[in-house]
Amino acid sequence: MVEKRFRFPKSRRLILNREFQRVRADGSSIRGETLTLGFLKNASPSSAARAGFVTSKRVGSAVSRNQVRRRLREIFRKHQHELKPGTWLVTVASTRAGRAPFSALEDEWLRLAHRASILAP
Image (cartoon, rainbow, N blue to C red; front, side, top):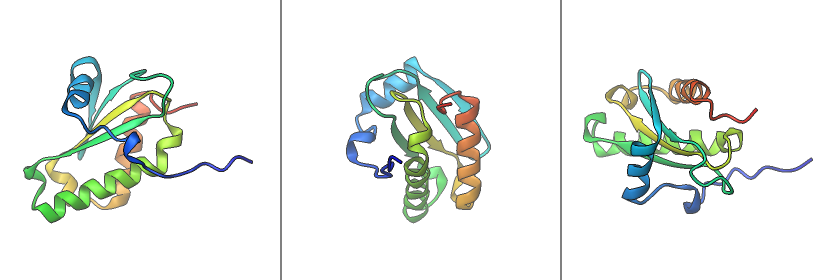
C-alpha cells in the first residue's frame, strides 16, 4: 500500500497575484453560502493541485481571518490527493465563513469541489 503524504508545502500554494488573476480570467467559479470556489482545470497538467485563499476584511478581525485561512488550508491539505492533477483553486471566504464551524466549511468546500468536477474519480 502506498502511503500518501498530507503535507502542504509552499510549492502547492498559489502566491503570486498573476496566478490568482489567471484563475479569475481563464477559470470558472461556483458560489456557495460561505465560500466561493474559483478553479482552473489543467493549469499545469503534470503537477499536483495548487490552492490559494482569499479572506477580506469583511470576514472579521485579523484573528478571525487568520483562523478561516488556517481552516481552509487544512481542508485543502486533507483532500489534496482527491483532486485532479494540475488544478488551481482559489477559495474565497464570505462574511459568514468567520462564524461557520470547521465541519460546515469542509462540507461546503467538498460540495463545491464535487459540483466543479475537480475531484478525481
